[in-house]
Length: 430
Length: 192
Image (tube, rainbow over the protein chains, first blue to last red):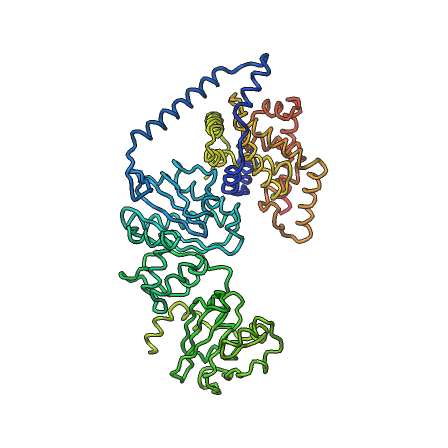
């Protein structure tokens, strides 16, 4: 191998192996104070015999003077438009981007997607932005720095993150392009740092009314808008549920969001949203269904139609996320309702009206369907305290058998495919 | 198509000028100049750390710490047109402080052991086959010189100054390292 080829190969190999540590480094630097500049001058003063680089000092003084002049000019010439009581919005702001994890951050950008201002929406965000000077930098760098700072401050963990991105831009085209760009950028940062993340990216048209309601609820306009859409579009939520939805974390809202189909119709408020990644930290819909079918000993082939949707439920004053699973069996017109804990996959509520019907092979299923016994003791040999408490409120509770038989039923293609189209099936079957 | 990764004289000069400008901006407290500096020299800093420590995770930590130290000490930098030499000095000191010589040798032995036991590379060990072979074929000094010259484009004279070694030593070690690598590649091909 020629020397030049070898050199290229070595450089290429190191480049390929280099990790992306930019977010981590930027976040660390923003927290690290610099040594005082005077230390350099002191060093020169203390060692008069050393060569003084006056040229360098002159250059620095000139550069600082230019910076100062530019800064003062920017303040005096740049138009400042008052907006509301205390908010000042610079005239060159074209786009607003809201990031919600728990910290809520608002980025205001110019038409070239450079950050004009970066505002903290809550106390957590203030801690994130402390020391980060994002004004003037491009959007990608700002996003990398913010994600890095969130990670360093413990708001992001390895495998359970949800981010809501809301964009208010001058036109639909810009908004759509930005939604895709930001989602891609954040995904890339997460992937490079081996973190998992689910993202909802939505467009938002912020007006005074939305801003006031968000302010009153103590959330960002992005989160308020998402809640509005849920209340407006999802049948199971009405305006009275808005306050509860507002209190929920982005991760919980994301779970509810991800279990509803989005058809992309013109009047669908969710239609132009961009979402990516599985909502981690929860049992997914398909696994929840498998666990349920196993627990109630129903073969997948006997299920004609099903729907799995996440919803909040209150237990002793605590909110718990459960999957509401609706099942309709073959040769049966009734719909049976069950509930599965989204975090543990445990069946927390069963429908005792499910008939004890034996299906023959002729019905497409090889095994039998049986209703689960009303008495939980019959097939639940061990219950912890939490499970026992739950039985008070539920019609029946299943024990560990659901876990033991988890692998006995393998979902067929028919169920897997139906997963994302459950609403359309509702219409057909109804 | 041949893609040339090594930098020309002019590109190296531009890189040094840019790095110097960025360090100056950092000395004025501009934290995001660090992001640009990272983009500019990430491979150089990481490659040097990897050539000394071999373990990927440790090299990442050293890279991170080096950039943080550069940020902290940006106000102390005297612009002389050699920003990379200054950064490498910081990195060398960090490596010396955190890893003594025996630890550095242990780490390369461990990584070879992982390969021979499992036939696969464990997490935290270098994935690039060629790079692994290169690092395991060369001595620490050879790796160091090869990396500084080929990846970062430092001249032999600059390396000699940086490592406080005679120029003749640097040159002979460099040439020996190149021959070793060429031989290793040739043997690898013939065994296949």
